[in-house]
Length: 280
Image (cartoon, rainbow, N blue to C red; front, side, top):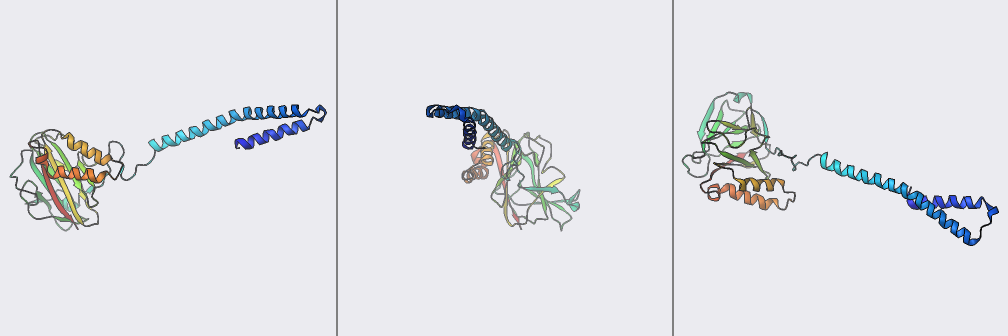
């Protein structure tokens, strides 16, 4: 009941009580005092009532706020704490590729680098549904043909560090989103620094990456360093956590510039590779 309705009810009751005692014959001044007194009583009676109602409403608002913070489902672009949304699909490799022959070729990479002081191996492996082979492209070698993959094909990276190395791997999808593939618990439990003498697969076996049904260009960025690169880590963290979408294009442009010019950005500290492949 609203407060004004409550007061009207109390006033009506007081009037009824006054009317029920005609023998008192109050004067006009006494009648006004009695009415004022009844109003004061109605307010005093209503105050605790509405105080309790206000407290209940406030409690509901607090509960709604807490529910929104702790129980609401995250949006597609807002990962739970410590976890990134998987924007690059992964699945188990096709039966034809499990334990199959690896047919490795030399192909796409930008520039002549003639080996690496940071990685002993960096292979782009893929398995096509119409092939009995797991094929591989040596990304440490000079550029060759561009690979085209369909939605039924799978791909992954195989790498070996030349010493204990900090590795960062990103993929820019057709949607223009930059996804950190490593380190990322979604795709591999391995953590930096990667250990010399070990061979790592991304995603971790038996999983492979795959593409959706759209067509266009996909880019992989691989960065290897002897020490952590906090500048790169912080920039990507700000990009991935930015709530204002207007800031993202500028952050993305800054990130891509650093990934495209790793040796110039981190002279003597890191080495980078960019691999472009087609989605058909």
